[in-house]
Amino acid sequence: MTKLTKECESFLEKVKGKKLVFTNGCFDILHRGHVSYLNSARAQGDALIVGLNSDASVKRLKGESRPINEEEDRRFVLANLKAVDFVEIFDEDSPLELIKQVCPDVLVKGGDWKPDQIVGSDFVLERGGEVKSLTFIEGKSTTGTIEKILDTSH
Image 1 (tube, rainbow, N blue to C red):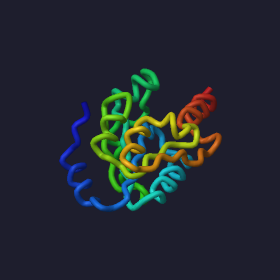
Image 2 (tube, rainbow, N blue to C red):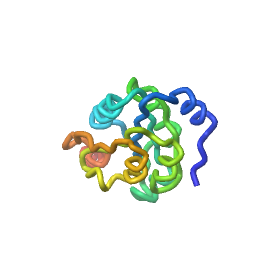
Image 3 (spheres, one colour):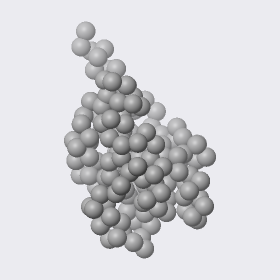
């Protein structure tokens, strides 16, 4: 089970009373779709925390060839985006336990997810929070980027 880092506990204490937004993902090769999405997520509240799938979790979800970038590198890049206030790595395949510990006011995912399909939606809604599916930019994906790189290398 996910145990929050001391840094995350400190961050949560610092933003207590503010409207906290949570999203999660692998964010392997950062692209325009990611940045646009994270900007939209941050606009939903006062602070944005990103749950980042660990390397082991990404491998289980995406296959042995992933992630391309290691978790600490992915965390560093995300944490240095203007929209992102904090990044917490989790090892499970699902962010549910992390969501339960963070207790966000707003839970968001990309538009390819319907609100009732978003992991943790029941928990957030039961606490009076909001669950949103944000606009998804078509044609922008890490898988698409990898396929393009592989296609041009022949």
